[in-house]
Amino acid sequence: MSNHENPDSLNGSDGGGEDHVPIRKCILTGERAPRAGLIRLALGPDGVVAPDVRAKAPGRGAWIGVDRAALELAIAKGKLKGALSRAFKTAVEIPADLPEKIEQALARASLDRLGLEAKAGTLLTGAEKISEAARKGTVALMLHASDAAADGTRKLDQALRVGLGIENSGYRGLVIPASRAILSMALGRENVVHIALIAPAAAARVSDSLSRWRGFIGRDGDVEPCEVSSQGQTA
Image (cartoon, rainbow, N blue to C red; front, side):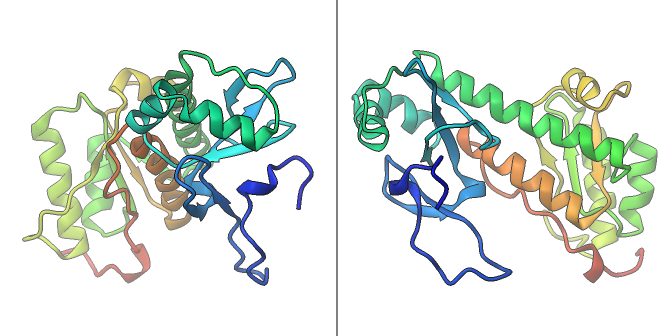
């Protein structure tokens, strides 16, 4: 066990092994879940609690697995302060804007992830390129800006279904809580309205990051990458 982690947040050993997934316990609900799906809170030397969504800050940490509405309620009722005081075994100070800071940090982590994938060449932008890849069945995850035009989104979603061989389903890409201006800055490209992840591993990384962000703001759901390797040929 790391001496930087709160002992109460750790699960018992599951035998380890190559497929071991770190498990943490939410200090508010008591539920245990994979660490990647929870949010770490770190205690600064001044006793102030801050979000550590990348789980890299030094010192002791505690984990939460609730959405923003539940967190705000826990703060208002004093439940979060009590849970953190017990976890850290000391008095803590919770900033009034902690929920907002968490949301901003989750957004930044997701956008940074997209930026890294753009540099690695694992994503496409531009409706024409995305449509072509989608119809070939090589798109593992499709994303649309929050202000994307309905017509363009609909056409790309249809291309995605064609490539997957599920034309009559309601399957579609994911509208993420970021405008085209924000996506363009994150990727360092002009007018990014739609994004297609073309590598399954990249799609999984982006999905994990988006799931935490959307889950926290109450918009979790179908952030699931497609299995490109199992897709058929272009219809």
